[in-house]
Image 1 (tube, rainbow, N blue to C red):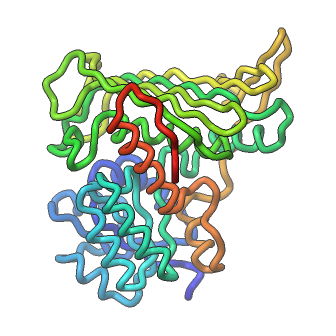
Image 2 (image 1 turned 60 degrees about the horizontal axis):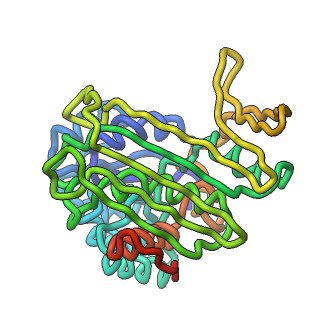
Length: 339
C-alpha cells in the first residue's frame, strides 16, 4: 500500500463542501480520486475544489481496486448500506455523526467492521480540533485536576436545507442532530465510563416532527457530570437555506475537581485555554495540530495502528446512539448507562 492513499467521496453535500474540502486539500497522505452524489450538480460543485473524477454510480467506487478509503458523507438513515458495501469491498471508511438513526443499524455496522480488517473513523466536531486536544492534554496531565463538570448550551435555528434532519426515524431531534457532538466530546474529555443519564425533551415554538428543545445530564464514574442543552426554538437567523449556514450561540465552560474553571479565549496573539481559581490564572496556547485528521487516519491504515484519539472509532459512535436512544425512551427519568 502506498503512503499516499486514494480516497473516494460518496455524498458531496454541504458538510464536505463547506467544512471538509479545505482540510482534504491540505492533507499530505490522501488524494481524492472519485466522487459520487445522486445530485450530479452537487458533485460538480465539490469537484471544482477537489479535482477528482465524478463517477456515475457507487459501484464504480466500490469496484475500483485503487481506492483505499471511502468517505461516506451521506445521511444517517441510509449509511448502513454503504458501510456494509465498503467492508465487503475491503475499503477503509471515514464517515460522520450520528452513525445511524437506529441502534439496530449501528449494531450491524459495528459487527461488520469489527469482524474485518477495516478501519472506520467517525468524524465529529472534535475531530482534528486543536482546542479540544488542548483540553485533553490539560486533563491528562492532571495539573489542575480531573474534569468534573462539562457544560454546553447551543442555540440555533432548526435545519431547513434538507427534508430528513428533523425526522426522528431518519435522524432525530436537535440532540441527535447536533448536541451529539458534545456528548461525544464530554465522554472523550471525562476519559472514564458513563454511569447514568437523564434526558429531557420539550417543544416550545415549532410544528416539527421532533421536539425543538432537548437536554441531557450524563454522569461519569468518580463524580463527573456533563450538562448538555440545545434548542431550535429561537428564531435565529438562517444565512442560507441551501446548507448549514445559520446564526449559532454557544455557551461552554468546564470545571475540575480542584475547583478550576476553564474557558477558551481569543485575542490578537492567538487562542488560549484559560483556567481560573481564587484569583489565580493559568493559560495554555491552542496550537494548530501538525497533521490533518485525514492524514492521521491514513497513517493508522498504512501502519495498522489504532485510530488517532481525536477520531472516534465506529464503536464509540455506536455507544453515543445507544445512550441517546435508551435515554429518550424514558424522558425525565434517570437510567443506568450500560454499553
